[in-house]
Amino acid sequence: MSDSTLATDGPVVRRGRVLAVLCTGMFLVLLDVTIVNVALPGIARGLHAPVATLQWVVDGYVVALAGLLLAGGSLGDRIGHRRVLIAGFALFGSASLMCALAPTPGVLIGARVVQGVGGALLLPGTMAVIVDVHPERGEQAKALGIWAAASSLALPAGPLLGGVLVDAMGWRPVFWINVPLTVLVIAATLRVVPGRPSTRGERLDVPGLLGFVLALGGLVFTVISAGHHSGPITVVAAAVTVLAAVGALLGAARSPNPILPLDLLRRREFLSPNAVGLTMNLIFNGLLFVGTLYLQEVRHYSPIAAGVAVLPMAIPLVVLAPVSGRITAARGPRTAIGLGCVVSAAGCLVLTTLETGGGTQRLLAGFLLIGCGGGLITASVVAAVVRATPPERSGLATGTSNTARQIGTACGVAIFGAVAGSPADGGFIDGIHLLAAAAAVAWAGALALTRFGIAHDSPR
Image (cartoon, rainbow, N blue to C red; front, side, top):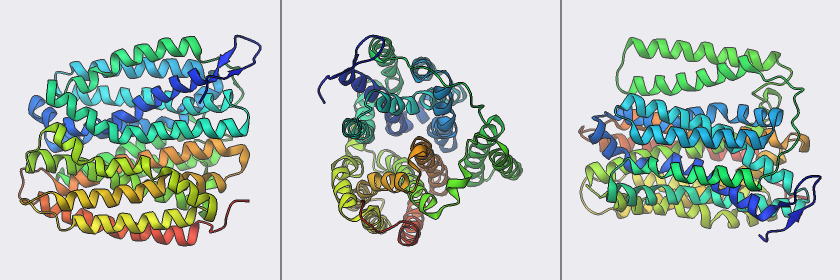
């Protein structure tokens, strides 16, 4: 996109530069969802961390990100997205430094949580500012397309870049790399991103927000604890999760500005694509977690080789996004989503034949099919969510969609790690077989949701 300008009452806004800065920031946030996976065996050895701890290294970040995304967007509306962007970048970079220096697993997990808070502050603001500086609908669509492509590129880049860094210098540079990058992005944000008036009238749904975050964290803790046979702790965590979820629902029902859009979630046209997106991220990131452990701990791949091996699952997300868009434009979102569910289910069935020895052809074939299915689904799910939402609430709709997918990521790592267990245990491969079969069934359920909950008409 050319570096066109936008006339304002203040300094001239160079939209191309604004877009580049915001895409870079958003890329950093999503990169940290996947880059850490290939570093997990090194973290386990360096900090003497068991599998349950490794799950929290991933999920501590994702739970904070998913739980606070909607709040980050609301805060930006209240005090200005530029301020929240800068605060988010600063927090993200500082937490990355804490991660790189972490002497114990507990410090690392705590720093990852803070990283997630920073990501939740800045991620919604990137989209909001893009929409603000591109008021014309055609240019806005192009800008958001570039923004979406940058987010998709973070998925294949994460394992590959992580593999290169871990292979060359160990696991800590996976976090070190964020520090100078965030400093540069903050400087660029201060220079090129415009400030806008805030809207301070709406009160934030604090009880609903706290209940939602506690419920999500409690759910992940319950699943991880159950998988590692923690006994009474699991029961207490489950009870806290239920109480927090009830509190979040009550808060949303009573608040004039609820953190959870209950009226939209009651519509099957809105709920169904969000459920499919959650399912996709749950399976994708769950398989990425156990798959990288399998490659490095069972097959003894180097970190960079493991990063290359998961590219067949990640690259199609980028390559097939335009194809999904064209199918959606011609036939509506249901066709692309349904086809993606079928292809992904086939990939999961291939993984049920995975073996300890032999080649990795089955793993690569399964990953490729799952990636192709995800590539067909991703853009179409967002289109289905937006089409099921009144235009004046499109921001809330996309925020809910992003939150649903990050919830899927958090739950996927928790569930897949709990069922598969440690690669050192004899049941690890059997656990992957069970998970792959269950994932195929979940895809069948997503296909049913697509059939009955998503309209099959072409856009007008």
